Amino acid sequence: ALRDADVRHLLAKVSAPTMVLHRSGDRAVRIEAGRFLAARIPGARFIEADGDDHWFWVGDRHSLLDSISAFVRRG
Image 1 (tube, rainbow, N blue to C red):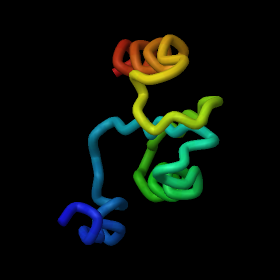
Image 2 (cartoon, rainbow, N blue to C red; image 1 turned 135 degrees about the vertical axis):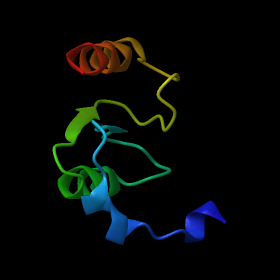
Image 3 (cartoon, rainbow, N blue to C red; image 1 turned 30 degrees about the vertical axis):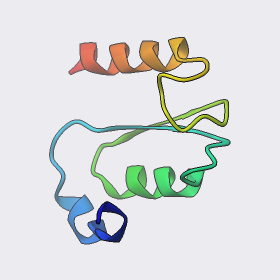
Image 4 (cartoon, helix red, strand yellow; image 1 turned 45 degrees about the vertical axis):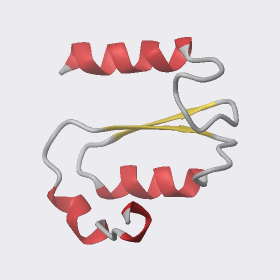
């Protein structure tokens, strides 16, 4: 199952541009998990957004969509 997959040893090998979006109050996945990913993926950008929704399209999605658009435009 997905929950059992441990890919931590692979994070340093990620070479694709990476942005980790995480809401500060996410109740499904702790914010520390997002910070962990971003810290271990070379060049990753970490965006911490307000709110407690897990899914980016729920709640205040406009600021997250702006962040995604800016990231994609920069390449």
